[in-house]
Every structure is written in structure tokens, then in C-alpha cells.
Length: 118
Image (cartoon, rainbow, N blue to C red):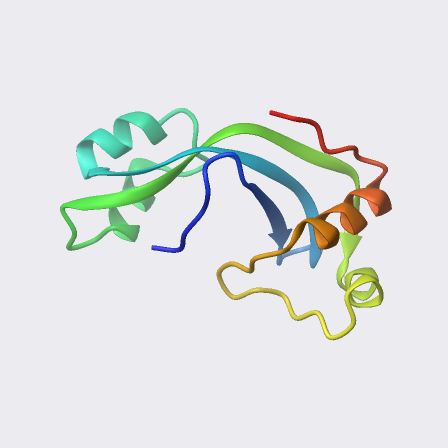
């Protein structure tokens, strides 16, 4: 499981249809729980059905999840071409990618979105 720090920021890169960073969320907590308990936390809050959830964790008895404190959708997505201007050589992550504070601040400046304490 990737290390996602509580209180950390996770950028949301939307592959289809926009190929852009569309927002971010703040991590409230990372949990590892038995699947029935994890589903009870996820249902109604996650954008997936129980069947999709069970299919994703097929063959496992427990799973990991990230509880979200705050989610923000940018008013203007930052598309792939602009990301590559901002960060030369940028390649969209296959799963996740760590960014330092300087990189995050440069992205927030592009969106006119100010990072606030959660």
C-alpha cells in the first residue's frame, strides 16, 4: 500500500475524458479493515457499487482505503499540455505520484486555488 500521510494532499488526475488534474483532496485517515467494515464506510461516500467494490478486492479478506477530509474540484482543469509546461517531462501517473510543496504551490497558482489548512 502506498504511504499516504494523514493530512496530505492528493491530486486527482482524470484520464478520460479530460487528461487533466481536476482537483485534489486532503487525507483524513488511511485505514486497513475487513472488507465488510470497509464497505460500510465506503457505501454512500464512494462512487462505486458494492459489486465493483467486491470485484476490486476479489479474493481478499481485508482492504485499504483513504478517508477524505476535504475535496476540491478546480474551476478550470489543468490539462496535460499545461502540466508539461509547468513540470517539463511530466507523465501521468499509473497509480500515484508524490509531489513536493513547491510543485503543489505551482499547481495551485495555475488554478487560482489557495491551499487552506484542513
